[in-house]
Length: 175
Image 1 (cartoon, one colour):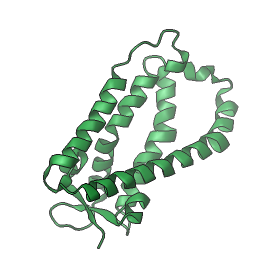
Image 2: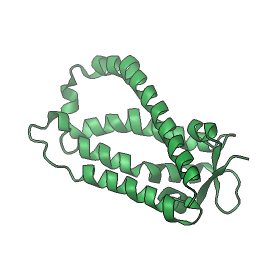
Image 3: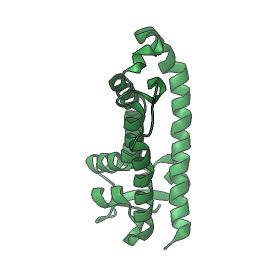
Image 4: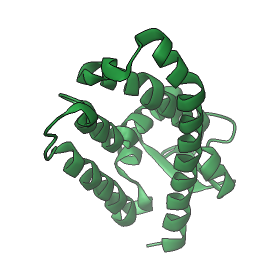
């Protein structure tokens, strides 16, 4: 097991996550919060789980999916985090660039734990508006899925996680 490789891959993901977090703090505060107030008025609009989930999907999930999918089919074949750490994502068989459908599939599978957390937070009633939120199974499922993904990357041949295996990709050192 190449722990240095796994550290680089994990650090690249952390860098991408921090970049996305900064982007969302900025866009939510500067763009979406004023737009939300203009279009929907008070925050009570978000008391609906379906509306909150739709908002989350359109303003957070979809941009993240596009970020990962489009950067990995770019000339870099890598997200900015992977690029900075000398990694790229390639087709496992040909070692060539990913196709867009392949990259989208990889991204959607990679984001499942986060989407499970969003669903757990937002449905049936957003936790912020639920008078008795209690335990939500999705908050247990999400970290368990992340652990599964990490374990697969640690113990499979060529360190492939679930999204790599199903999309037939591999993360390698940049050429």
